[in-house]
Length: 282
Image (cartoon, rainbow, N blue to C red; front, side):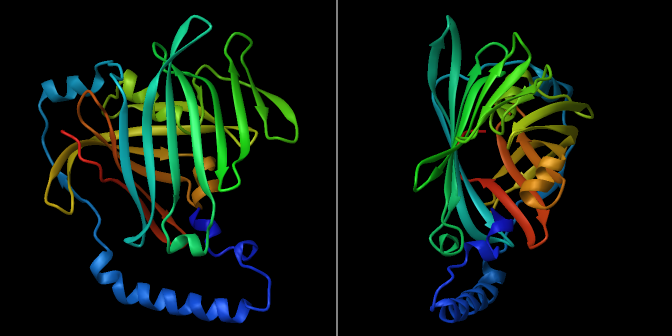
């Protein structure tokens, strides 16, 4: 999204272009003046952690009941948008139980001046394996479906429908979509100092991802609240494609919930952060 904010394709080509550009300069001047007051990021605090706490992060679990997580998206510390991650319910498909997961993401009122689209991701994840069965990505306000992915585990292929054509690509044992991999590791657990390799199907391709857990620490949020987390680094050409940098840092709650608390990536336009802001009992 951030790469597209200044893409000329998103700037109207009309008689009002000069006026629009003048407004853009004024808006960014105001943002720069407000930056010192807005640019707060969670503070990372080193911490020793007990063997019992380490064991709880590794232990497999399940997602119990419906869940809704609210995140704030910021660029250079400036509020840019919101994202919701939801476990809606459990549905039975072909005799098996699947979590229905939904993600809503989009810009706030100011950034919608430059980037108007919002997205809804929906995926069905097997309750036992936490692997996806099918997923879709929809663009609002038009409601266009950009991509539907069906994961055929028996034949080790993914069927991808972008609304224009249908294609098939090979699946690996740990193939995911953009949403399902977050919940896969929430269900199966994490080990400190371990490397995980998996693939994400996106845009008609399968993208290898390397994820490394880097140890435990605490995050101190704006309100002073401290959350114990495990630090994770993800590296992939997919992240480069979307965000302009192949590396992304994430911090996940160091408990059985393993909720993503904070993501950060350094883009060409500055740091982009996504921070959990919903009220949860950690």
